[in-house]
Length: 249
Ligand code: ADP
Ligand code: MG
Image (tube, rainbow, N blue to C red; front, side, top):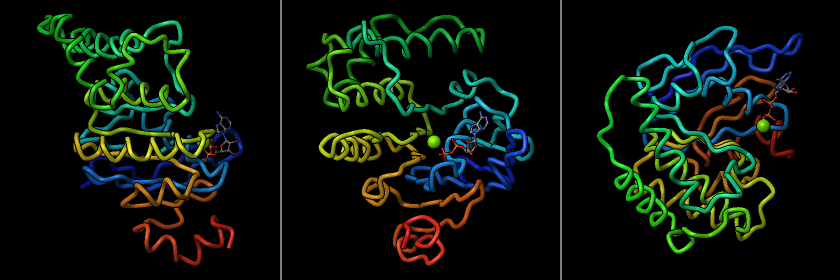
């Protein structure tokens, strides 16, 4: 059984069937890409995984537990972190101050959720944040004003803010959208490093096939809300249905 198991998920928006019988299994410690044309339902699927949307029918199991009926916050506490399409950082704060937000949120949220008392001091949280910044090669930027950084660095910071929560599953929705080639390549390298260092599971929605084929071990192709095929990158590249429906050949 995969770390994430999506079974027969359906989601309608009025008359539009955004997701139709979606099945998806993401194995632990793999990078699984979800690709498909615009409007295929990729973001809707992701929103169903993090509690932002509730499927009409079907099940979503994470680490052996259902996520359905839980709030986004509770799902985050279960170990799913999501990176947004546009970096969601606080521009007025420094890099380090941004890092401390998820650290405190995790600590204090855990207490609220589980009714346990504080055992992690502020100093320890700062150490965790610094260690994470070092892991993503941003420690030298810790006192920088976040708004003044490049798009690539903002993305890097946002990923660090997700990773410092020690998620089991990292979800990325088009992490390289709008990025210059150099920043895209940096993001690929960063994700490879993260994968190696932290043994994390990654599900990534991505339009850029260069990114997909650089990172993914499995690929699911969604078309009009339904999975067309799931296979290895090698097989996806040559798949006639995929070429026709997505790669435009
Ligand atoms: P993708 O991320 O693959 O581009 P989306 O999941 O964003 O696709 O959208 C799938 C379909 O659902 C599209 O036709 C989109 O217009 C529609 N859709 C997405 N979100 C909503 C919503 N909140 N209300 C109504 N329709 C929506
Ligand atoms: Mg989308």
